[in-house]
Length: 179
Image (cartoon, rainbow, N blue to C red; front, side, top):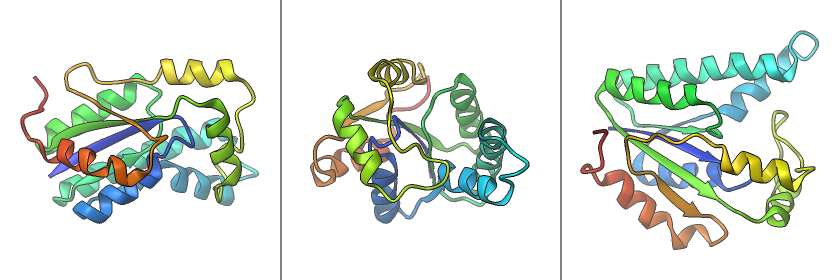
């Protein structure tokens, strides 16, 4: 059993990769954008985007805890922008005695990210574009990573078929554990 924490800028391919991993492994995906979009749609006159983000993250973690407790492998599909996300992921790893993996989707191409954001079927919580290259670079440079494990970085500018086997090998390699 495993818990995968996905990371990467919006549009970098996290959801596409998470779906491919789930198809191959049977893992359950907890997609932050689905939960946040549902909150925004049902409470749009009550909640602002920041509050709905905080609430949806708590719901994400409760679902992850629940599914891991049932013996399921889980993939958390969300940018990893806060230290708390690493702390909570590692805490659930210990609580449920599962293998913890961290997969970072990297697409260091401002124009391609904007193209992907503009052409996807966007959920209510998802951004439509990036206004500033500086904000894009800042977010990439400041995403949070666990220091205790080897993280897998994937260049998602290439086709999924060119790296999915590498990701599956990383997930199934039990030697890479928390020290």
